[in-house]
Image 1 (cartoon, rainbow, N blue to C red):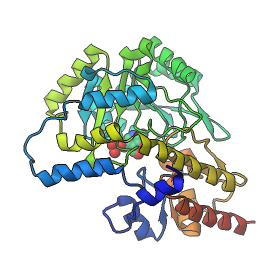
Image 2 (cartoon, rainbow, N blue to C red):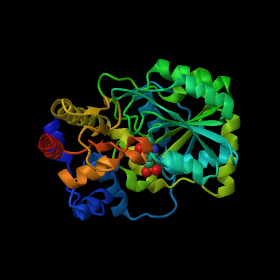
Image 3 (spheres, protein in one colour):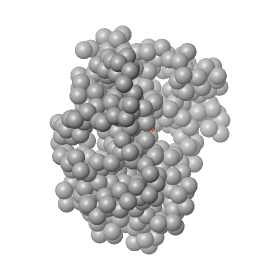
Image 4 (tube, rainbow, N blue to C red):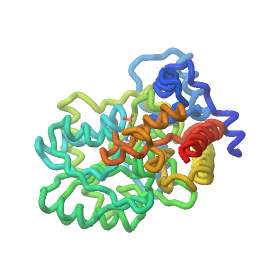
Length: 386
Ligand SMILES: Cc1ncc(COP(=O)(O)O)c(C=O)c1O
């Protein structure tokens, strides 16, 4: 399916739905390009099956479909060459909920936990709210291409006695799909300094054509250190169902995690919330490939038209672009500058790290028409500043 056909079929007008993204846009009189959800419907097979479930009316306690885990495992095996086992899986009500649970279950109060910034804010919030200590290691920015600072990571692992690394892979907001060698070097340090890795991989289905995504659990040598968080919610636009997986290969670690869940009376299966994930992985491959092409085209359009004026990340994965408006920002925050001058609502860079107040995060999971509107408004503003 070409991009135009995909957009015609799946673009959804969310102006008058309960969409948080569009309600805020309306309130601010802006085109909403913030928050990480998309303006496309999930594929029609998911909708048909949900309609059937609802119409049939059996809303009693329910099991998961018999081949639920086989389906999830097959998706990740086919797309990312990783072999998960059914017994490794636990569930949670979303990826941020999973982060809370992992930190609570597998670390102690005051334990130092590392994050690589700039980073999606709930990582830091979760560490603080669970009364652990944030250890920040800044990513190195080379003209919008962000990499780990291994010397800094090593120093902090050693000196601060870090217990867990909260990894974002692919990374929100810098759009990196970490290379195999980068992850190997990182995990080798984690192993040496006995640091557990919690790898949030919720963006792993949106991978640009020239990139390969390496799930943390595909590194057999380091499996014992790793807790992965995976979900179909971002990639198939299923956030309203609040369903994600926590995958732990290490049996001892998993048992500690299960004990925690049992104590909290959480982690039970909600079969209704899990159904869209099941149908997405069962029937969503063509849709997902088409969506990836749309995101790639949107990214290229922005790079082609704004690249001569602005520094931006090289998008490798996710549908989130991090854009540097430093040269044109007339406010304390670039997001404010875009609201006032262009009527575009983005996520402020400073939410991802204070030092990125000249940057904004832009959501590309929308129609090319919306992208064109945004590019036109930004170009007009940039030209007006000369
Ligand atoms: C890396 C990452 N993790 C987690 C989330 C939130 O996931 P959930 O809504 O399942 O808690 C997001 C949302 O943007 C995200 O980008």
